[in-house]
Image (cartoon, rainbow over all chains, first blue to last red; front, side):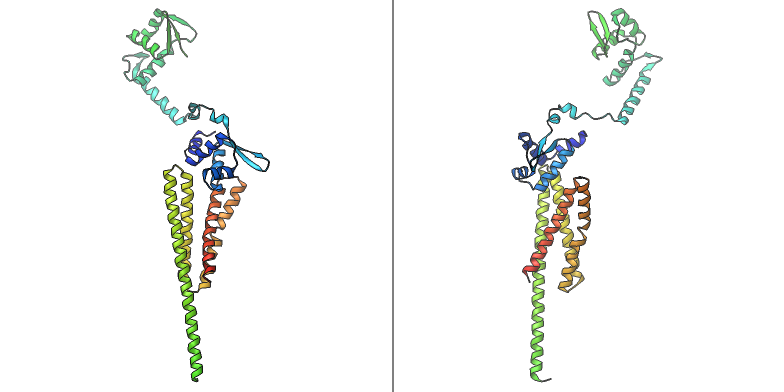
Length: 178
Length: 146
């Protein structure tokens, strides 16, 4: 299903009126045309578009072709419908930005100064979090020892790793979050 | 040439002139009626285009634009035929020939769209229906002014 096509098809008042009618019950072209005061050819045109977007389907009922909505699609949450495939160009740009931030703030695997900007700070913390194993439980001393290798202010680093949800803290023990 | 022959010749000429005047009047009526009607259809389609655009009915607005274009095409062909000849029958043949040649591609495209189950079928059908409406108008005017 092409989400952009779906929204383009939905952005039309007549097609929404057709869908509203079909939400009530399946209908034939002629009934939709008289109900919505549209030409039969116009309704057929809209139904074809709605069919191509996967919003309606048709079936034979004796001599008539009945149109009905595709309920499965209508039950999907909007968050699913607005999801797009990741654009490789955007992915490349993100990777380039990340590398630039790491190059700027890391000096021989050591962070002289933590970035103030949240996005850059996130990238630096994500990089530092790689030093932790996912299955291991660390006590605070172990965490501090690891963080000292990256930055003087290991307390801030430790707190940030928890705040940014790279580490989970539970009664003085830490675990890497995936 | 005796007087009777001269009179007959004059009467004959008068009749010819009257026929010509009637023909010209008929042509003027057809011309006025046809142009006025097509212009009113163009106005109506343009208003519908605006109305549909404002009502978030983009595709129907595009359909109205197609209609406007087709009315304009045949209005141009009407004027072109008028300017090409003064002979009414030649004019009629010339103009109606445009109704055969111009929609030919639309018919072919409609057939192809039907085979491919493409949405273009409805667009080509609209072009043909609109052209037929114009042709019917012309034929009605011509027949009614005979």
